[in-house]
Structure formats: C-alpha cells, structure tokens
Length: 305
Image 1 (tube, rainbow, N blue to C red):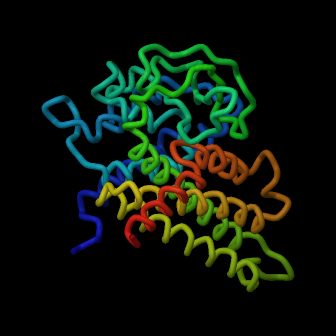
Image 2: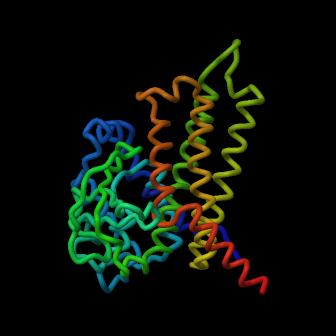
C-alpha cells in the first residue's frame, strides 16, 4: 500500500494553509483574543464558501465529495492556525442542519468527553444556532474556560443519545486539530531557538534545547501518523489511540515550547500559552484520555481472548 499523500491531497492542504494564513493570521488571532472570543461570522461564512464544512458531503448534495483522510488534513491546518469555533460539530452537522454546510449556521456539540457530574459542557453555546443531535439549544450558564477563545457553558441537560453516533469522527477530527497545534508549537520552538542568543550563540545550539525540539518532533510525527492511519481505517480503537497520542503531543509540545521560550513564553504577548490552553480544552472533548485508554484496553482484552 502507498501511504504517501496524493498530489491532490497536498494541494488541498497547501490551499487551506494559504487561506488561513491570509484570513486568520496572527493579527486576526490576537484580535479574537481581545474581542473576548466572539465568533467571527464573516470568517465562518468564508469557511463555508471554501467547502470546509461541506468537504465530505456528496457533490450531488452540494458538497465537495471528499473523504475522512482529506478532512483530517484540513483540520490539521485549522489546528495549526488556532482557528476558533465549533469547527468539528459544524462539519459533522453539514447536510443535517440547515446552513451548516454553507457556514451560515454555527453548530456546536455537547462535550462528550467532559465531566458528567453537575451537567454537561457546551462550547460556544451563546453563539450557536443549533446543537448537534439536539432539537433545540439548551439553556446554560457561562463557566470559566482555560482558553480565551473557547467560551464554555454548563447545561443541565444530558447529551442526547443521537450525539453518540458522532463521537468517533468527532474524536478523530479533534485529534487532527491537536496534531496541527503540536506541529505549530514545534515550529515556534525551533524558530525561537534559532533567533534567541545566549553566550554569543543561538540557544538552539545547546544540547538541552536540541533534545526538547527533537522530542517535540517525534511526538508530533507519531501522533500525525496515528491520525492519518485512523482516518483510513475508521476503526474505533485506532481512533481512540490517535486521540490519545494527539492530545499528549499537543499538550506536551506546548509545554516544551514554553520551556524553550523561557520567561517570554509565559507572557500574554506570546502566542505559546494560547496553544497550551487550547490543547487542554480539546483534550477533554469527544473522548478523554481515560476513555481512550479504557476502549483500547477492552479491545486488547477481546483480541487476547
């Protein structure tokens, strides 16, 4: 089997990266933070027009007609750019919720991976037109969020049973977002290691920094490989493993990127903390590490017996 990306897939990834670099660069990212995480409806519609949400809809239904592997590539780029909003839920709702495919509707989802006690969490509930699998958006109370670009509400309602059907795909696409974040923090660490000088030479020349960056690369590439493989097989156990690896890569790479940046990395002006906070939030969405480990353990137990 040939696991290399096709030319069409490489072109798709490059096109999405160019689109996001032009429409949601660093200035737009910081403007979103200053705006308190308010969703940019204009950007949402542009994503819809570019086929972001209708990527996997059949062409006869107005979609692009691509598959899960291509969606993973697109979401990886979105994670790299720290694109905010309920991207996964709106993508999954394309064709089921009017306006989702076109980006004229914002669809969010119950946090299936989050804590169940005291109600469920829903991201971007205040700006959502619909909730995946629910007939109407439930009322909720705002709660503090680690990520300034992911406002959270706690709702008393339990996640609808219909939402469970989206869990595996939601977990995989979230894992792709995490991979994008892990790769981006690697880039930031390497760039800073080349630019920042101590004792007359770039800090990247020091062995301790080299080791951190090498470990970041290994984590990101292993996670990316697992996500790509799960996108091809669509196997629930492989998807759980991919989410587990991607969450670990995103969180640990952001932490190591902070380490490379030193005190500068902890300042509000740097973007590193935004990657770490987003990684923390995503790690609790769709499938947590504990849930992934339990699913993988059950799969291994069934194979051994």
